[in-house]
Image 1 (cartoon, rainbow, N blue to C red):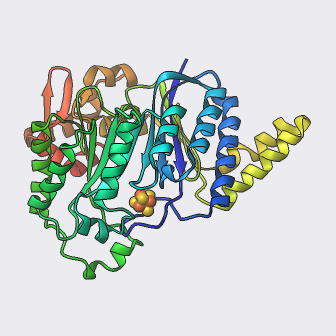
Image 2 (cartoon, rainbow, N blue to C red):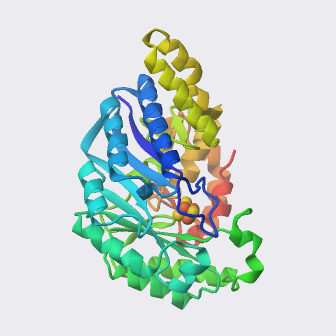
Image 3 (cartoon, rainbow, N blue to C red):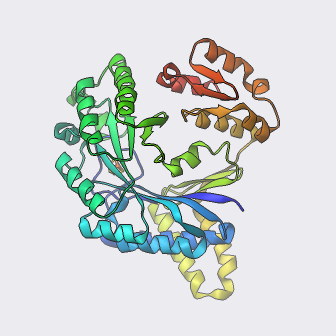
Length: 401
Ligand code: SF4
């Protein structure tokens, strides 16, 4: 029986951060309630296709999932449990922003089965948080973190962002020092990307200067070293964990090329899925997503027409960009997702998966980057070197067929 990782998108935020180009927006409570109803129906509908499967991981991402009531998160999880096999040890992560959940809500989330929190801090420096347009201060974060510990969350990730306007290596190390003193189990450290259409992009000249390329690379290098000294091992280009606390959900995604038995199913607005060799994305149009809700409600009221209507207006109606992955697509993915992991990829697994030796497809590329000390081969394993990780975008792009 195939298993799956489930992603659930909650697209609501208090307000838009200056750098954000994610699918997220502020919304009234009534809209949020409508959305939760639509989500539960989408999950129930999809059961026709995935029923009986084991759910290895659930990830509530956003947006700000912690804006929903704890009872709504519980209802969504109950809906999943009613349709699929969700075990007691299934990793269930909820992304949250500091200040969006008090002691009581955190306790109720924990009781609902959420067992991992991912808290978006980004920086421990209040001036940087203000520049980014975040809704919270460092002190708000600290309160949330301690309340989460009191609510028995023993697996917490903290999201950080480097290469911020005006940031120096010393400033970044200050954030890392402050955060590691709290001893979270996991730290994600991404560089700020300036995306078109964001407030930051449109007003970049009004912000302090961004770190130059050398400083950015230096920040990246000291991050690994600093976190290793504090007991956090890098297991993916931007992710660090204490032993045993690597994010299982993201690992399913990065190892998808290897683990053919694990699918990745996304529910909610704009969520992406890969099931077998099929890939699609849900509509990003909220009205369309909610209309699907109305259509399915009609189906429930009319048992007779349910199956016909479900086919025409249900789960399929909100899917866009449906594509069938070719063997080349899957080989590329095997390489550029697998090489994001510091453990790298196995030549034998490649051959077992595709029926052809890795050298026969990628011999030249492997030689090119190994000669330049960007890749290293040790027995059956191939992985990026530290220098290769610094320029991973260039190296990984070379694996496109
Ligand atoms: S909290 Fe996250 S999703 Fe929401 S606006 Fe900020 S960056 Fe975007």
